[in-house]
Structure formats: structure tokens, C-alpha cells
Length: 82
Length: 145
Image (spheres, rainbow over the protein chains, first blue to last red):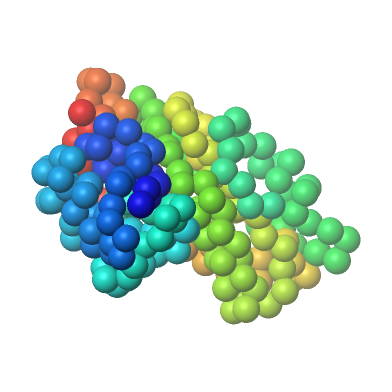
């Protein structure tokens, strides 16, 4: 299935694009999305602790949560607004 | 009014759009691009980016929390993205309420929460050409390529 992935700031730079499509098997999890990102650029691995992941605009705290086709997954490094 | 904008922020216009005839107090906070980083390094500007959909939803949640805590008030949160020069407004929080206590308290609560939670990122651009992503949690920079 095709999952739309948005990347921001430092994570966007490491992935080379702010909007990507990952092809993942049915039943894939949030953790699988992150792993697919790390597979694109291993340097992301160092950001695993600090990067939060949102599914359809809501932070996900469980890496085992499933993702579905048409979900919008966002990779969010530590914020710096204001 | 909750918005992510690319154009210049007009604080007076946001203030007028926020208050109504039942509001006797308005507080307005503007976060402005400074010419020095926290370590004193000369800054020529900041570049912001946001996850718009989630940022606006976060602004709405923060406003709901502020009203639940401090009482009825009208709240606007507007953050600018793109390249900003020194002296320009990056973020505006305006709170209008019947009396001043709620306006002051809700305004401080809202800007603190925006800085802590809203999915917005800031890249500092220095006079020597270097750029760093700066986050609000630890205040440390991450070198930008």
C-alpha cells in the first residue's frame, strides 16, 4: 500500500524531500514507516529519539499502531516555533 | 483567528479581528526576530516552516485549554513561515476578555504552549553564512546543510 509521508526541517533535509510516498505491506506499523525512512538515509537513525510521528495530524505514541492506505504520516523533529 | 501565514503579520489588524464589544481588555504578544542568537552570535534572519494542518489544530486546542483554565476570552494565534528579517514579527497571540487578568494569563499560557507544542520549525541564519535548526526544548542548534 502507498503511504504519504511528510517530513519537516532537519528530517526533510535528510530525506531530500518534504513529501514522499512509501510502498509498505498491508499491516505495516508506524515503526515500519520510520524504518523505511531510515532505510532511505541512515543518518536519520540518530534522530530516532527526538523525532515524533503524527498520523493524520495526531501524535502517535505507539510504534506498533497500524497505518492504512491514504494515511498522512508526518515526521516531526523537535519544534522551534515562536 | 488561527492561521499560518506567509505575509507580514499586522498585529493591530489581528487585535481588531479578535476583540468584540464585550471585551474590556486586550493583550497582544508579538515574537520578533532578534539580531542576536542566545549565544550573542549575529543573526541576519530566521526561516520558519510549519505542518500547517496540525499547527492550526494545535492552536485551536491551546485556545480551548486557555479558556477552560482562565475563563471566557477570544483568542487569536498567527504564526508566519518563510524567510523573515530581523525586526519582523514571527508570531502573534492576541487575547481579548472582559477583564485584564484573563487576558494576561491566557496570552502567556498560549505563547508558552505554542513554543512547546506547535509543529513549527526555525532555522537561524547567521551573518557568517552558517545556518542552524534551533529547537525550543534544549535550545541547541543542529547544523543545516
